[in-house]
Length: 376
Image (cartoon, rainbow, N blue to C red):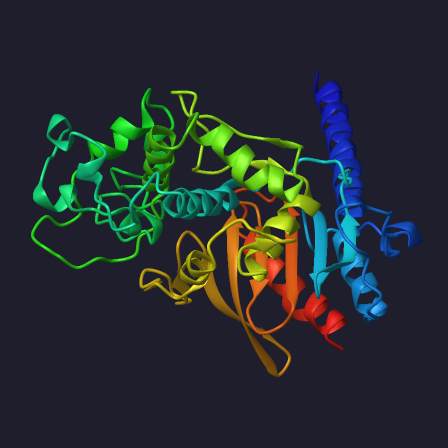
């Protein structure tokens, strides 16, 4: 028996060493030339291909880090410069036709559709209150403060509901919403954060964006999904996409709207254009301006920054230069960057869901590789 145990232990030790060695090799994989090479842009009716030059060595260096897993779980990088397609790179099994799940990037689309609905008169203004859309006295924790929450408060995440996705103990944390049968009821039943305070602090509150989607569903012709297809996707020539849905089968504005990377780039360029595409004004220019503006300070975040109408607002440092940027952002490191002072839109899709490195690595990719490469 002693000999058998000894042999078994040695076998287990050997297998452990083999696993560790294999794992180390996988973690330190050496990129091939094919993985490092800049991917040629195939002809596309969606975009003119840019003839601008850029620092190819920096892009190759970025590709190498993606291949060797220094930048993990990246699926695509698209760069638009002066309205033309400059870079289109796919990784980890993705390709041009892939539909990417960018999680909360989809929240920004709720802002878009609200702006269009207001312009067409289906909603009067973002200053309208929840009491104009819901019989709030039929929900729990009714208060005048809750009745006076405006659509703008939900757009800027300053509604005052007891909902904070950064706080696992918060009653309105999104993880408490998903298992429920009715996400809108879950939200409207919440108490207010501080019923005696009129201060409107910024707190990331996914459930509030679900309510915005429901308001749109109730007010626009044929519901949100059909309205978005007619007023946004069709004018942009976007035909391949997938919504996720709430338990009530309403298009989910909390996130998860899947598009191709090139189509996310169209969405970003639409905002860069001030809401116009070709000869059509899809989103009112004033709404675009308000959406990308610094509507409120993100006081709860250590890094500061601001927030617009379901768009983030920050400064990106690259070398000795600082760049003002508004962007849509989602779990996993998904971003649509709309730069304010340079003619650039950058889309990065990734699958680093719930990973601490997800957003920092994307910031490094943009600051240390993409911006220096294209602005050389």
